[in-house]
Length: 632
Image 1 (cartoon, rainbow, N blue to C red):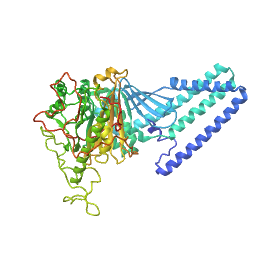
Image 2 (tube, rainbow, N blue to C red):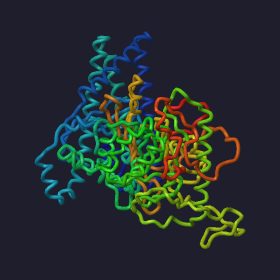
Image 3 (cartoon, rainbow, N blue to C red):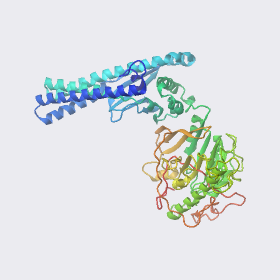
Image 4 (cartoon, one colour):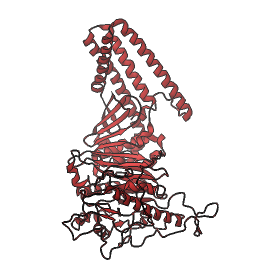
């Protein structure tokens, strides 16, 4: 909304070069601030002359400020049409400069549109059904809608600002008059309020952030909210076209109220692959409905689950996996410390499941590597945290060496058809065969160094490593662009020193029955990642957070990939003894209740292939420290 106002406030009709525009804005801001400071100083001198007591001066200032705030918030609201949408607008003092679009009862959309202690609130009151119907039936009307919407927003902001100025000044004078009952201090208070309000308006207009429209924040039950703004990549390259995006916002808000069920959640072009990252479902049956809805709304291409889909890894719990085929997209999975080899065998039997067990798998054009958690610890009463952490690190080292060998032996991407679905017997034959290592004769066509030695690719051949515990993330840095993890039941994103992005997901199952143990239920968290199909590079991602058990709140927050300062992971204990050259085949630490001796997940069932490490990619999560509390 502020973007439209910025086209006329302190800016010429014709566009200027960026340098001259910045200089003009800086000079105008300096003059505005200087004038405001001088005016406030003169008003304080007048107040000191008429009000002898400092306490009275402070009291009058506070009363005037409170009156101005009340006037702007309560009496400064205007009703304005924006295209086919009828809205209410108001400008109110706030600690953060932002614009908030409220769509009752669906939720809100917030944009960090400007600086300064001022917030623009826009509430959708109703939709002009006749005008909306004409637009949808005759798309040619959209050509003229852009100018109409921009003018409507501009007039609305001006009218709201003027009304807020008058209402704030009047209420400041009224409150002061009631308090001191003297005309001159009342006039001084009104003048001070008017100058302050005008200064805040000017500062907001001079500090607009048009690019902020590409990273809105959503709250409420806006399941289709991302479509209100559009494609993140498109906006990243077309920030100067914000007026057209404003039109899209208005038309999509109209559609949202009329046909919410059919509104697509995201509108990427054909060159984007959508990956849904989930983790730690812990038998949370309600999670399947949310996952199915997100798959449909966001048109997800592949799901990645970083482990702990069950609680105890029993045969009886395998019935929880029956919903996976109904999702109708590939389901890439690694074993967590609450999943047994019994769980893994059941997962391998599903037609759309891809179990990462130490081999490289290509799904929808994305090269995945991953391995199961080396621990099996369903019983939280009997734990050896140092030994478990060491087992995780040793497993990660072995998996990292698999990634190195694959990288050395593949100059380019693995030759696999994008979108190819895995065979029913998954993970039986690893693609990651040993290749040349530094110091050996390079393979034909392989990238070599100045002395003829084979070198790793500038970009890792593995796109994503999936690993349950982020304690092993440091072993994967530089070996894959993405490291997807879970385990900690808390979302965390870290850029590692060699450039890999670790994304640790929270608990998509709301921590399962563990949610009942806490006063504040764990939220249901998942993320939708948008990867370029040609490079498999991450372009943007949406973080979806739903209120935990018994709650109904929802938040969708979009992020764009930007260069960030690398974060050095916390140190983990160095394993003793020789490092593994490959992942461990079965869990090395087994804790199992003594009353069920018939199921010992530490033993590999006959006929099942040994489990191998899988890629670790985690949107949130820091590497584990020795002796840290384990969530499950």
